[in-house]
Length: 206
Image (cartoon, rainbow, N blue to C red; front, side, top):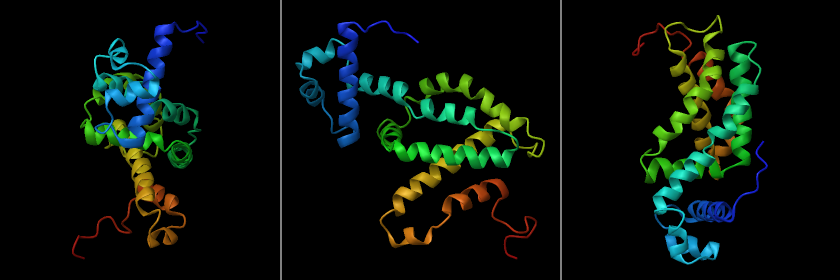
């Protein structure tokens, strides 16, 4: 652990990042101006430019520093992997619980996807890919896993399970559908593990 005190410049930089982060979450990236960030920090606008060339540079640093994978990967790595089903159920539940505690993660990702069209994701992947290798290995070592599916694709599908569940939970939270969704998470996991067809060889039109 690095206990070296931050310099005054580094402290100011972190204060700018935190102020921008809160404004982006409150009102979105486009609606946030450099002037608003400066006012929240208590600096002149020129003071912000001493640390960042512009608003996009601030967001790019935030997405790298606070991307959800920093919380998600340790959870996945710590999840027991006695078999695929145990791992999927335990890891997915742990991830949903973590995201429930940090709804700002979803807002951050939506800004990245909607307003930046995923522009910053290649930089994130440069950091993530080496770290997810042990998790992918957990998938590939399971004897009852389908051999025709690449482990990386399985991992992507697993992340899709997690995000699709959480996003749809947000969508129906205040609707009458919410009361009909008891054990919905278990059903999502069941579909991921075993599919939706009772007879996979049945033709589409019966």
